[in-house]
Each structure stands twice: as structure tokens, then as C-alpha cells.
Image (cartoon, rainbow, N blue to C red; front, side, top):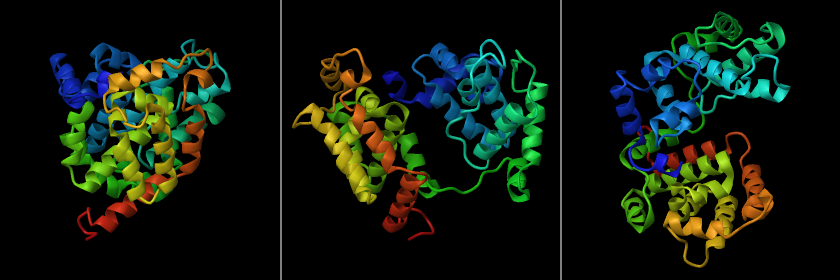
Length: 319
């Protein structure tokens, strides 16, 4: 998985899709209906499901095809979470079938309404498995969900747009940096970070730290290539005014000794020395994860990042 985040992953995925006769990730995805993104990422190689999801989200926002995307992703999730069909799993499995990460509003709300429709109002027959996002039952639930939205939000969905949300200002600064800077390793990449403007460097590092910790905890952050940005992430959290978080990350970095190792191989060697039969025993950051999650309720981080770029004058119109 670490290799998936190294280099130009968007270029790799796009080249794979074009080699298969498609103009991009979304076209390729539609050629393989119902297949989980994890399986597709495995076929591509050096790719992660979240990367594919992020790329097709950007394509569909640009094309105004968000309803197609949501139905497509829900179909894949249902097949992944309920392989024996609707009604075969517990309530948790059914709720997980609608867990789509990274959607902007009002599409997160729309997905919740599709979930409520199928789980409470218009129950599918036992054993139902949508073959694709074109499934009639799924499309019906989506249409009812759209109709149930307040007028203003429904109009946003119908034109394929999105609502402005906390984090959008910071995202405007971060997006070109993410395209230009490809995640690397060691002191060489530390020099790449040092060449960025402070606001770019801090947002880039904070983004990667938060994304990894929220996905798999501090252990995942340090075991992956992303751990290279830990020193800049602590500086970034301080710059955003999130001093408790900065202190927490510094505390976890002490596991690696007085000199923090930028090299992923060195960090993994140190982590591999921690052995045990339970997560608490093999994960030295086990108790730190919950402390991190407790610091960020709702849009705390996104709001702090937006306020930071306004203070720094990083976004046009806010100088």
C-alpha cells in the first residue's frame, strides 16, 4: 500500500485506464460494474481504492454526473458488504453498504437519504444485489432521495454542483501542491517540503497526517511513506492554532528516538520490534488514536485550516 502513494498515482491510474481503452478512471470504472474499488486497485497495482474514488469524484463533479457516481458506488458497496444479498447481514453490514467517504455536500446527505429509503421505507427483496449503478431499485431510491431534498439543495444536485463547505479555502491552496508534489521518502523529500511556501508545506503535511490517522491510526501514518511529513505536520498544527494536536503528534514521534527517521524503512524496522497478540500490544500508539479523534469534532480541522489561509492571505480575494 505504501507504494501506492509514491510518485504520480493519478498518472499511473490514468495510464492504466487508457491502456484498457478508456479516456479516464470513470470510464474504466463503469466498464467493471459492481466490482469493489479495492479489487480494482489491486488489478491496477500501486493504487489505492481511495485514490480511484477521489479521481472519479473529481471527474464526475466536472461532468455533472454525481448521481451516476453515487449509484455506481452504492452498488459496489452493497455487493462488497452483503455478498449473499440484501438481508443476509446484520444491521451494521447494511449501514456500511452506504459508507461513501469524501463526498461533498449535498451528496453526503443524499446518500443518507438513499440509505434510509432502502433500509426503512422501500425495502428491497431478500437477496437483492444490484449488478450496477443502473439497477432499477437503486435508481428509484436515488430519485426519491433527490425529491426529498430541500429546494435549494435539490437544485444543486440536479445541476451536478456542490455546496461550499469548511475546508474549501484551504483546499484551493492545497490542490495545486498535491498535483505538483509527489510523495517521496527520506531527507531528499524533506528538502522538497522545505522549498515550498510555509502555508503550502504546513497544509500538505497536516492533510497527510490527518488522512492517515483517521483512516488507520498513527501506526498507519508512520508505517507508510506519509510518515515522512511528521515534523512538518507538528509545525503545521501549531500554525493552524491546534496546539494540543501538535503536542500529541510530537508525543507519538518520541517512539522513534531523539532524531526522527525520515526513512520509511527505518520507521518500519522500529515498529516491527513491537510484538504481541493484541492491537494494544503491537501498536505503540493505540491510546493516542482516540485522543487524536477526540480533538476533532465536526469541522474543527477544516475550519482552522480555512482561517489559517485567510490570515496568511493565501487565497485570492482574502488578502
